[in-house]
Length: 422
Ligand code: FA5
Ligand code: MG
Image (cartoon, rainbow, N blue to C red):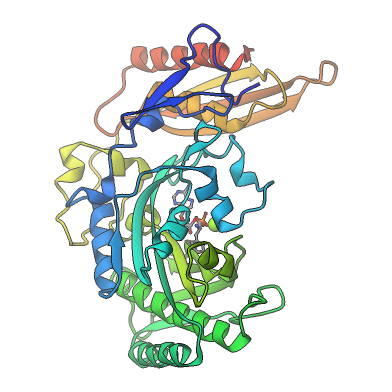
């Protein structure tokens, strides 16, 4: 059964995405509400907080090339294989990613473009893009978000490595004067090893350069909002991580309003990526950061849906290149609706439910929480109860409208997924 059961009568054999025609197959799960986001390009809308944040980061790396117009439509080879993802990696599943067909998908991360950008011969670059993942629905998750990828590669010969060491020392001196406290982690460890093709010292030099480049970026972005002062410095924490395409790998968190927030993933680029790009004599680092996560903090934006608002009460609050505090306009009351059903079979995924709700309600849905699940002891059928919160940013929703939305959710669940309402 396909992730979203295509109706024999209405399933189109072709779909049009960004003006191109594609053949559909059993992998096709791109929904209309996602398709409608493909041309928005918030990172290119001057004045939009996502675009301002991109500009601030680009300005922090003055000698890096910029890319921001690569197509979101990629092959699974670009998104996964070119980065050495194993064949059975869960990210490849159609429950987690949006596919146009088996051979064509929406990128799930900006790393999908690493090989093609390195292959241009670009040694220092930043790439900003919209990325797509099938995910839950709440104030901090949205199936489309924006990432910025940054990378720096250099010769792996002794004199190039020495150059990088000098650059690192300069950064270290600059940062020593800042009110930043970093919880570091070993550059390399048994569980976070250097690659076999790298000598350990070069790998350490690369990791240290990465850490200082990112600490200095985070200091520039966060020092003001986090109120970094001598008795209350900006706190940044480095932790060991795993990505199929870097080793060693790290995640970076920033302490903000009493919580550690994951900001980015990074590491020393896997040599096979650089080999594929035709730059086997180089080594270096890459990072990928989530722009919404950072923008929500810097601009005090409380809900990730707001980035997609075309309401002047949202957009008019921002000026390109400036960080300011968003003033929420009045919140309208929420409407709650519960829905209980028997699942059609074990292979219906929660993400199938979320996509149906998004397709019907668009940005009028604020949250979907699964409040109960059980398996019938005799029939072994799975039951699920979900609570849907409807709320508009722009107006009060009347009962009839919410009922209409809920009715359509119910009929889509029945028709497209084959659930049985309880
Ligand atoms: C990646 O996407 C890797 N490509 C990052 C990377 C690049 C690692 C280069 C190494 C080298 P991850 O899935 O953790 O990793 O996402 C990276 C960042 O994107 C996260 O730290 C977070 O800031 C942001 N992010 C991830 N998922 C979401 C989401 N659903 N909504 C908003 N932001 C998200
Ligand atoms: Mg992660």
